[in-house]
Length: 216
Image 1 (cartoon, rainbow, N blue to C red):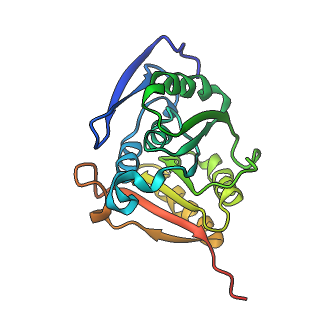
Image 2 (cartoon, helix red, strand yellow):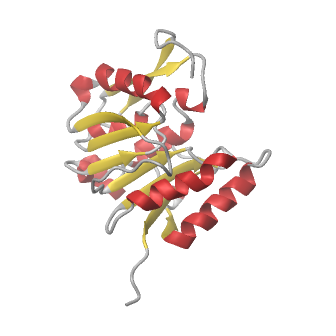
């Protein structure tokens, strides 16, 4: 990601309480430089009755993987969560810019941290792990699964939102990801009618992953 941070444009994300987060995106860069639709769908899902309209996130420890702009983690922090927002080192300046930009709207806490999937681990307990549109590159599928499994502890809930893509090798990547995940974690799809009524699409899915229950 070589684009300088001064070359940004802002995406406004409005919460149900009419607070507006300003998320800087890069004009030029990799896939993590903009707010994708899946990030908006997941962010708005956090404000639905499934999360008591966001109240359930107060005081909760959140890990966002592959955060890009940090949008989802910042929305969670706006609702009172303590968000650790992670991505590759190149993306950390953009995430930090967005944390600073929205500092007055953060009711919990937000911190940016570089994390390489499959290599780095954070030795903390997280109530929720959030990821949006991370099923994209073939070489990252196995490291992503390892990162999720490594950080998913007992009672941790993983929310994975992604846009279903039908071109190129994307269907195969999605199948591989879910096969690997289901080998390690329980998988359950969130019904579409549980998504935010205005931010939903039939080709954008939200899945919940949890630790498999012991049979002992």
